Length: 435
Ligand code: ASP
Ligand code: MG
Image 1: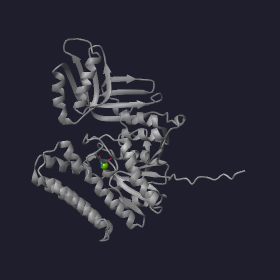
Image 2 (image 1 turned 135 degrees about the vertical axis):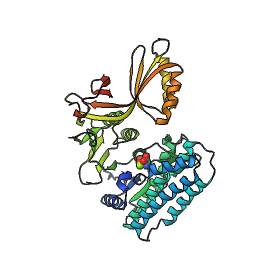
Image 3 (image 1 turned 120 degrees about the horizontal axis):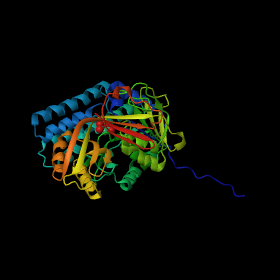
Image 4 (image 1 turned 30 degrees about the vertical axis):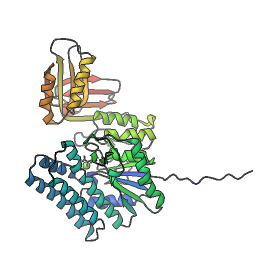
């Protein structure tokens, strides 16, 4: 008998970590995240968001820049750079090997801000706001190295290829996979001692090399894109909560942690507005059957929640998703004609142009209602546009409560006195619009 021999496996047991802004908010938090990373074997792709509330601060900088307010621009810029510089001083005591890279990126942003810009608002948003992730990863990767972890910083603007829909760019999956192959996977294959590749969440690049962003809170999505493209074994998202809970503990008492949940159920929850995971995150993982662990960076030993393909293990207790400050819009044709497909498609065209996120819909013969959220500044132009053709009524600041698996639910005490504007019930979901 001819002896069988095994082909040497080239499969890397890859993990993807994602640290959000809160998990790296100051020197102590960063050191904790480094310790967590060090407690796992490589190879690990570490995706990091901007530090703390840096993205909000960069949005303010962008607002100052686009309103051509030179003084506010330079003050906001200085404040953000000083914040990072102070953190670097605290973490590295003069041994920061990435000083050059940090300074280079600081002066790139400074150059951009000092030029007159005729670019679109969305374009300049991406060119400015992307620096939060560049700086957090330069610092984080520097910390891994100074703790003797073999880590490499990589620029996601050379790896994640997107469309040129600035501020909400769409991923080019095929090109991204090739770029991941020739960067991240190549590095791990060529350097057996390499433990971590550190790269940015939230950002990518167009075919012309311009920086793009994937939408606010998009770093979870970046982690899942990279997990898909590296064919990782698992994704771990480090959070300040113990996992996925059946309600937001800031709003409700006696919340329960969900230990295990299917992709399908988790997609439903995030669609209804559960804010623990970015809604786009799960699809690429589901497609390649890569489990996602949500774990607490405050208690890294505890189990957390695993999101995977096991339907039978689904959590069937009631989950509560509560969204405040929603908008309820009621639309009816002015001539008493029925609300038909062509009306609805026209309405959706208008809503989509105004960047409205629709969370619930209801229609009758003469009326079409939506509960939605949108940028406040877009409300007036939206109502004007809709009013050209329809009679429009709206309420601001309504609440949307979704109860998933409502069979044995208790209606939340704190919402008992609210008025029910809409109630919708399906087999597994009960929804209320309240005011
Ligand atoms: N830093 C970006 C944001 O705050 C992306 C993220 O945190 O996921 O929106
Ligand atoms: Mg962030």
